[in-house]
Image (cartoon, rainbow, N blue to C red; front, top):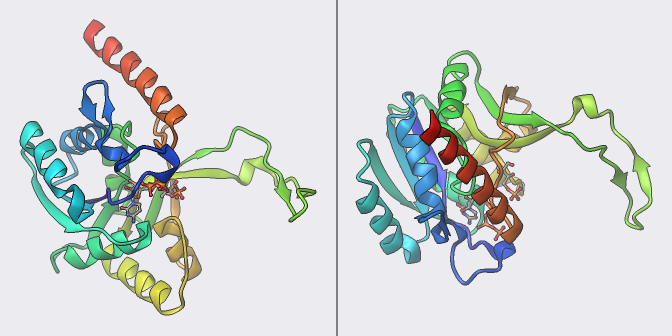
Length: 232
Ligand SMILES: Nc1ccn([C@@H]2O[C@H](COP(=O)(O)OP(=O)(O)OP(=O)(O)O)[C@@H](O)[C@H]2O)c(=O)n1
Ligand SMILES: C[C@](O)(CO)[C@H](O)COP(=O)(O)O
């Protein structure tokens, strides 16, 4: 199955001078960890990295270092994640029926999670990895006065991978562009088009590295993971 990796962000919330996916986490760029998980996933056959042209040299260097066995294509990114994924969809071969999309910034996703999503995608038109929300969530108005406390049993935190039938997702993206929808994930486009999106069990460690604190937490998790694999 094809995997698209949006990797064309600026990392503004990270506050660094470059794309956060090029920052180092335990000796490798963030993007390299994401690619290693994709390489280890049995169900992933082809990888499209969606990156800004200005990052292309760095991305090529990461690829040269990893020497992945899977076919990798570089696709130019857009101004938003939504635009970047749109570009990725246009670059897929016409034979691609289903696609997984996974944020480069979720560099701790395991190969098992990719495989689980790909397997489920054979039985539904759209899905996302997600985990149940642990906090009590408040809905507030413009003055920060609480308006509602939704039932936590119905709240899930969206992650990636997200997977879809390619033809349907392309239609949803086209609709979104026509109607100027501005969304943060692909599932939202599917939802707005009235299409069902299934939840698949995500991973608590599959955080999106967004801020410097996330980077520190990711390093802690990765250290634990590597230590456990050395002892087994
Ligand atoms: N124009 C964009 C913006 C984001 N992304 C990707 O989408 C994922 C999720 O985005 P986010 O974590 O918000 O990354 P940034 O946009 O880099 O971060 P920020 O919003 O803090 O600038 C990341 O892998 C990012 O590289 C992308 O491919 N193209
Ligand atoms: C796609 C996503 O990673 C799901 O959690 C997320 O929506 C990306 O955008 P965000 O604006 O950084 O939440």
